[in-house]
Image (tube, rainbow, N blue to C red):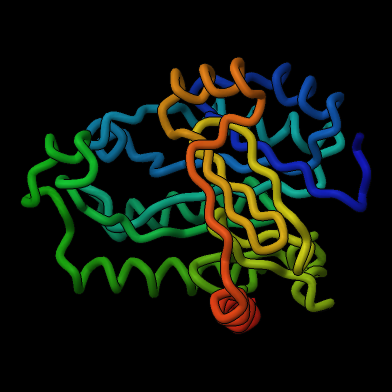
Length: 245
C-alpha cells in the first residue's frame, strides 16, 4: 500500500466526504484523489441542484496534502445553466489558488433525452454557444497564467506533477476514465459504473448501485458487460491513445 509504483485513485464527493475520510483512505494506500466541482456560484449550483460549500472542498484539499496523496485532481464544467464568464473565471482562479496537481475542464452537454435530471433545466437558462467558446478561451488563458500546462482534451497539469512527469516520459495513457499514468498498464475500476481494462479486454460494472452490490455479493466481480478487442481494434485504440497522449 502507498507504493509509488502504483496509482490508486479514488473519486470523492466534496458534499459528503470529510477530512477524516481522506486520512482513512490514505492509510489504506490510496494515493490519488479526484473531486468534481461543477461551479461555486450559488445561482449555478441551485440551477443544477448540486450545492456544496467552498469550505468543505478546501478542507479536503488540506487533508490530502497532509497525507500520502501525491496526485489531486479537481474537475469542473463550463457552459452550465445561469453561468456567466465572470462567474466562471472567478471559479477557475479560486480552484487554481487551491493548488491541485490537475484541473480537468469539461463542456456541459445538455441532453435531457439521456439524463432525466436535465429535463428540469430550460434551454433558456443555458449560455449561447459563442459565450461558451469565450468561456473556454478565458479559462485556458487563466490556467496557463497560473502555471498549468494543457495536456489535451481539457486536462491541465502543473509542472512537476505526477501527470506532467508521465507526459515527459511518454508514460501517459488515455482510457475511458480519462488521463492516467502508466502507458500500457492494466486498469482496474471498482464501484458502480467502473470500467476496467486488462490487456485487450474491457469490463464494465453495473451503473445502478443496487445491481452493483448484488453482483458483488453473488460473484465478487460485479461485471455487467465485457468486450474483447480484435487485433485491428486493438491497433486502432493504441494509435488513438498515443495521439491523445
